[in-house]
Length: 360
Image (cartoon, rainbow, N blue to C red; front, side):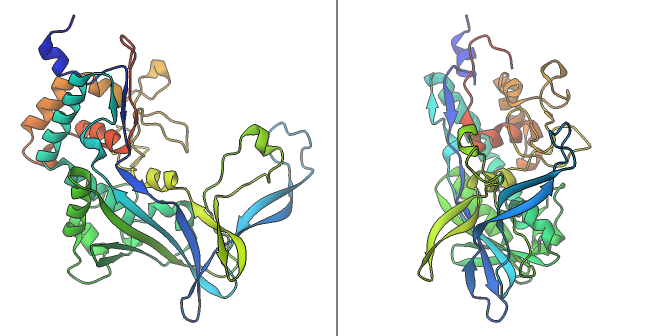
C-alpha cells in the first residue's frame, strides 16, 4: 500500500479527464471576387462522376464506377479563397475537469503550476502560434497555391504572416516568426505569444485567424470530409464534405467548412521529441499515433509501436521524475521535451483514467 507521500505524488487514478484548452471554431471557406475582394461563401454541391474501379480485388476491375460525390470549387469571378476561424484559449489544463482522487487532482495542479512558473506555457504558446502562422490548418488546400498569407487578430492588433517562410517540420523561433511577418518590421510576435500564454495560464483569451490564398476560379477546394455511419452511408454520396447551412442572397446554401477538430489537430502538431527521424512534428496524443500512416511512435514494439519515445502513460507513471525535471530547469528552454509532451496532452484534453494495475 502506497504511503501518503507517494499518493500525493501520484498522477494515476481510475477517473480522470481534462477539458480542451484550445477551442477553435468551425472554419468557413469563402471566395474573394477578383475586382474588389468581396467575400462570398464557397458552396458544397453534388456532382456525378464516372470513374473506374481501381482498388485491389474489386468486383469489377477496370470497369466504370459511376458515383455521386460532393465537391467545392472557387466560385466564378473569384481569384482567391479564404478560410476563417476564431479560437478561444482557456486555462483548462490547470486542473482536471473530473478526477476520482482528490490527492491526484492536487498533484496535477502542483505539476502544472510548477511548469507554468518556469515559463512552460510560453513555450507551448509559441509552438501553437507556429502552426497558425505556417498555415498547417488549411491542410491539403495549403499545397494548392503559391501565394498565401495568414492573418491573426488579437487585442485590436493584426499580424500577417507569409507561411512559405516557415517550415512544417521544424518549429520556428520567435525570431523566425518575426521574419515571416508581413505587417511591419516590428510585428508584436512576443505580445501575441504572451497573449496565448495568458490564455493557457490564467484567463480566457481569443484570436481570429484567416488563411488566404490565390487560386483560379473553378479550382477544387478541400473542406473536411465527413465520416458516415454505415447505415447513413447507404443513402449518401460516396464523398460527403463538411458544410454549414446559411442564407445567402435570398437562398439557402451549404457553405464548405473545416471541422474544428481538424483545425485543432493541425495546431497541436508540436510533438517533436518522438525519436523518429522519418517523422517531423506530429499531433500530440498519448501514444504518438500518426493518422496518415497508421504508425504509433510512442508505444513499445510488443504493443504495435516503433519502440522510441515513451507514451504519456509511461511518463506520468513516474510523477517524481516530472517534478524533478521541472525543478531543475532554469527556464522553459531547459524543460525536457518529455515534460512539454505531458503538459501538451493535458492542453489537448481527453479522458486519461487508468485501471488499477493496468499497464501503460
